[in-house]
Length: 164
Image (cartoon, rainbow, N blue to C red; front, side, top):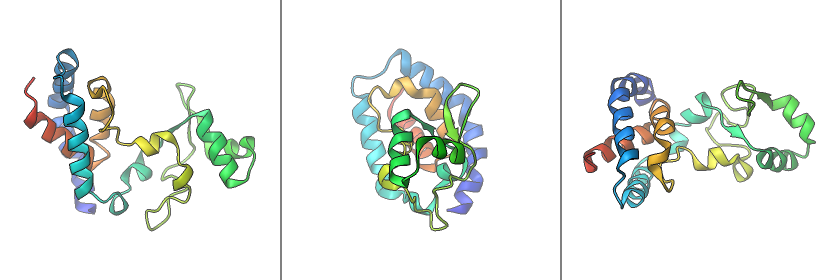
């Protein structure tokens, strides 16, 4: 897996312009069955991809945490919200709550998440490739191709199946 992760940024950079153009066109004229295609590609890719052998998202791309996430995780950790925020979070330039450090402090050396049952919504949904109205998250998806090998593969396969 490490060789795939090492090569991913270069591969994603080489495809970035093409991918941005694809998503721009896709947003203007999404096929009626786009969501079905995206969900099938997502399902098929994650039957082949073992996130525990990778965890690159947890190592390099921190999630945004909602107030609901913060309350749920604080409760799970049995600490008050203020302590949780002070220990683990910072406010980014957009005013969002994000992790102070990467890799994620809840990621174990075995790539298991110690708060998996209560992980943030952004983590549960990552890499967002099975979302409805997929054409609306093109910029996010292109960014995710730099981090997630599965997202990269899904986009490449989508470009083969959908001619825009």
